[in-house]
Length: 479
Image (cartoon, rainbow, N blue to C red; front, side, top):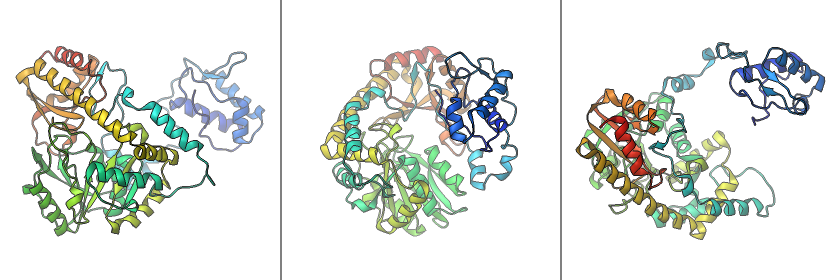
């Protein structure tokens, strides 16, 4: 069933309702077989008589867009006329009115969810549905919803006080970060955290230092705002600080020091010091994206860069890899001087986050349930990692090189004997066999890496199925 809302001008005419519904069908908002809102519901929504709406429906029926059955709601016809190539009214010439921000966004590659009908999907960022603590979360949300309140109103733009207090304790226990609750700003995932950082600290024309390769959605935030990115190569020790550019003109640096995305390097202490000194010289801030800091297997946890940042470092955390990306819960830890401008800009962006979900997460953290869940997920994903690495080495042997294996929920696999130009062909061949693999070249800004490589995530696949997926991949690629 499709949502009720129909985007038509509320002129009160039968023709405006007819045109609006027809455009919705043409745009795919209502697809063949979908039920349409009732004439009574549309009449109430638009403030017109049912006769007016019925007249619009009769026109759609006569033209073959809609079918009706006795005692049932009208539905979109299975063989509705194809209007895909006809521009919807009101949209003609809209590109002329787009802002520079929107035009830059349109020039970037789209990063939309892919197909969901794959037998084995090694997409990075997904987690297994069965890993989510459904009963715990349902109980926590229910408790938050049923809590006695003086009012239901807008919350603080920085987030629920309960969650910020809970995060303060968690960050000290899990990452050694000492901060005050009012230094924490809860965001709609780490992506919004990045967007706010850029809006507060970057002007069009400013330069932003990024890793090469780097998280594409972070790079897109800066580019869309009109910044120029300066890519710095990464190696086994993370960002190569010997290659840092002159600091002049740089407003920001974006790094993943605890587990470089995607190559997996850990920024050494010497390089951390060099990076902070560079930021001092540039009078710039550093964004530390600690996107999967909870998952370390063969090495000791690495202290966050935030601890040695001299108030230059902005720390970003998220529960996307520990609970689920569907929750859209992330957070910033800010230097004192940045708290007020960040809170004011966030309030303009979204007023405040979803209160019930924030309070539910706070209760899980306070009860210890969240950290027990994290430990469970660390053990489970360690098993998945071992199963994946064993399967790849047994199946492909010396034909591949695997890097970034000591932490996180993904690795990079370089396929020997293939160059970058063949990545898309290999990915398409795998997809035709029901396997999702994802080229690394899209994470580079320059054409410097000639090998064919893929980012493999393993957190969404049952450990018992991983070997079968790798074997099928070998068969599909004929390696």
